[in-house]
Length: 388
Image 1 (cartoon, rainbow, N blue to C red):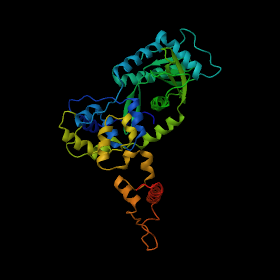
Image 2: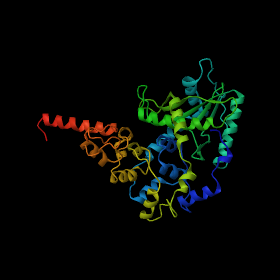
Image 3: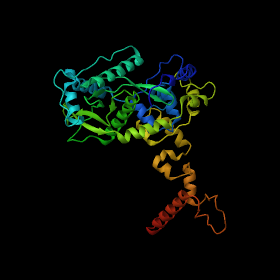
């Protein structure tokens, strides 16, 4: 997954994505949170195309009449920035102390005051910042000291294009390890934090780790643990825990590899398709529906278009509204109507229609057979208590 300049989108694809977004609409950059959500649902071509084109999905959902209460409150945003500034204050001394205490090798001495290098990563544009970050990482790895990269810029190839990502920080150890640092404003209470929030932070850190791996810097290696820094209990004092990323990295790498290339998705769109929020709602709805989606209830917490996709899935009677686990158990039964029909014994197995096989006990569809058994057991239970 190393970076290759030749893998950049062609001029034709860039022009096509700009047309889909809207001629006068600036692209919305993809961040690690969005990329982690996309990797968790690689079958959703709709999200892949919209994110790849830089479409503002929140504005699109508003134009479609299905706005989602999605995103961080202004209060949480300000609080998070204030906490991050405190953690990184004094040249990152407290942050590097946490890095050393939680992730450094046992025989690695703690950095002394003034020993931590904090290079300037400013440069014009994301490409310039990414190149400056690459150079800083290469230099820090070769020097063999402690280095803190504050808001570095890295890039990762996604669906035939690449996105620029900005971790909170990356710490370079004297032994050449790179530790991704995630700074969050949710608390660690009595040594533990909300598992759902920790999991989301780990998935974001895994995306950053994959982007760092793609650099292929000689002598450097990405730590398979990230440092999660949060407020301790109900104070504003920072504490930290190391989070194992191995499973998230493997899963994210596999899911990103499954994404369909943007040029293939765009090529299947009808003529005149657009996602410009300024267009009429009916036109937007047609364009959105022309791209296949893979809705799941988990989308409600990760995608601005989830309410729209849920309404469509409900109107079509799709079993996706019941969750991925249920959808996987139902096999070829793709609608709620088909599921109910199978439970009533109205759907027969087409693989074996011999007279000795009862319509109530199909031999080739385990899902339908299980539904019939469940319906029969339910009827027997209700009869036993005198209910119809």
